[in-house]
Image (cartoon, rainbow, N blue to C red; front, top):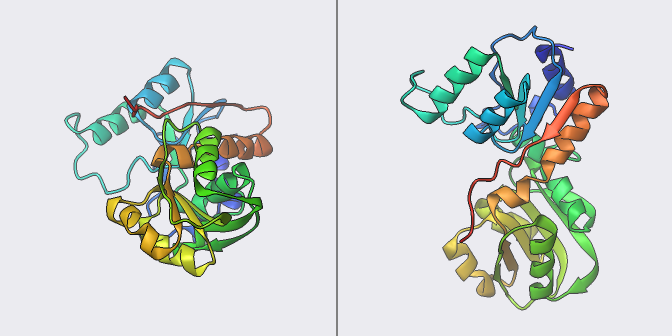
Length: 253
């Protein structure tokens, strides 16, 4: 299987039509689309650490959720981190394929993975591009207990809870940045909204809004989808080596 054939097969599972209009993903860096793929490294981000691991492990592809090129690259020089990484990857023949908001939105993607991890059922889409999910817990619980459960299940070093006093039953989830979809979560019937980042003022106003808010970190709310990507690759090509890389490099001290 070539790089391009794998990308085409992944496109069938994660259709480009699901992407938000403002997004940029897909083939971020493909030095040789006809290169035979033997080893794939899956990471949330194509960081320098992921690049180093791919080079050391002789991987042909780094497969990510977050695009390596998002805001645009104006110059390809070694003086800027992203362009320098692109130059090194291209020189070494390593491709980077990224699936961003379409992986958020697709059935079984980022937010379905997050909802399943938290034990939500009867989930439906909500929010911009139908990216988010809202579902129901098997049994209600108080907000502090649920927040502790979120921390444990996601492996997050900490979570932030803005407790509005409502029992947790109907939960909306939005991996990554979810501050713009608070009202959409409320309109979808959620009593609790979990996201990676919501923002100080949004969290502060939660008691007045009547909906519990939980901020669990961008990385920790989205990293579980890496295992989903790995499973998709294995469904396409069971014989390919496909390994996970923990690309989180921000620590709580």
